[in-house]
Length: 224
Image 1 (cartoon, rainbow, N blue to C red):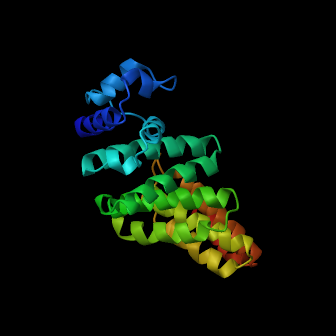
Image 2: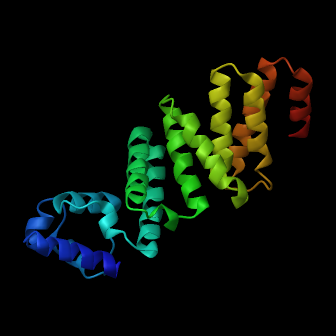
Image 3: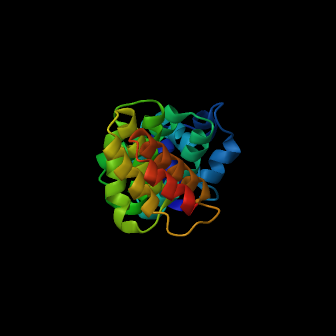
């Protein structure tokens, strides 16, 4: 946070702006002072505002691993909140913007495979929820990144959404395979994954019914 604050202060002075002028009506001068002195970190929205005002890319302020990881954590929280209120396009746009800045400034390698996988998964899920045909591509990227990272709720969700895409295209066998993969990622049932388990079970029963595999439906019901 200290380096981030220093970069903001340096860019502000280079533009010959006072704290009041940079803060304008978007944030308070006292908050900007805390940010510049490394006492607190700006939200992604605040950092976007500051970057725009100072005519700098966000990556200019996020040039080291600790600060990128800190911004990543806040981004995930914000994106999950937006998904919760069904602002899928906005959540996807925020993550796409973050990834683009990292790519353009060669900082993408500072994120782990698991972190990248979660970002791609959220984008893919959001695109699928708004029927954007880019969902399949991003969900596959998520699976590629998350596959070797162990059980992960977003790997489960990625497989499930890939299954729903195939189901919508009436490719039931492919959908069945994806739903089975989703089910295989849930090793132990707990409070964090119980909803995903129920969703996957419902999807499998549904896809078996569409294919008239009633023996499989009965077997699943008996195993519940």
